[in-house]
Image 1 (cartoon, rainbow, N blue to C red):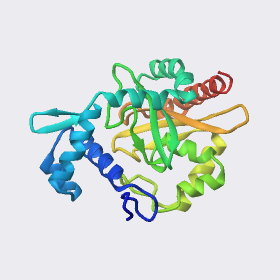
Image 2: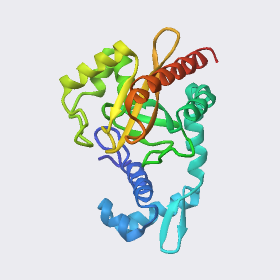
Image 3: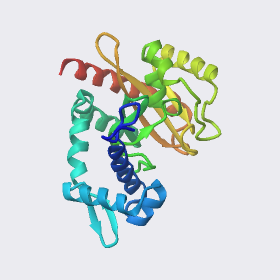
Image 4: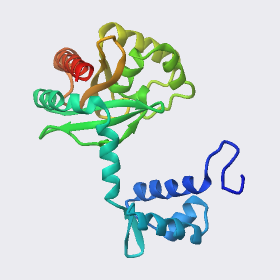
Length: 256
């Protein structure tokens, strides 16, 4: 590491530490100086100095002996998602889709090999899980992610899948050949299923959002408990509604 705190790859250690602290606070809702120092392997004085700087900038707030994320992150998060044309193109269509299906819907884009939800809407009976706007998910374990993988170009797909396929449940596809076979089926029929592959007890139907020239822009899905997402309705009617909504969103995103 050089005198500016950069390692051989050009990364700045202090910046990594600051974001490590921010993510620690996010994961624990609020964190104290000693807890952060112990978990991140840094001194209490280093943790305190970073927290003091972040607080001065408005990105964390002190609550007694702990620190929580500041609302200033809302501005950054809103700016990050609204820069996507899909966000604006999806809102009305996803609202209508969720009203028709009666569950929960989400819009996903890929970034750094992960799926990121940029919009989510839930019906009155829709089941909320651990996902929310900004949640990142494994592409191979979700219907939105498999829809994206099936329709992105082969080179990008290989880059994303270069490594171990993490098994999140007993039904997650962890074998590369099995996944490639399913992606071929998804390309043929135009939509993907998630049968308890990310969360036990939850199913989903996803479809790719394609531009006018068939470029993959993202994907959408609707998800719900296995007690309701079942039978002919789940296997035929919901896919028809999801693929139709994805086509409309693709057109809107292309020409907006």
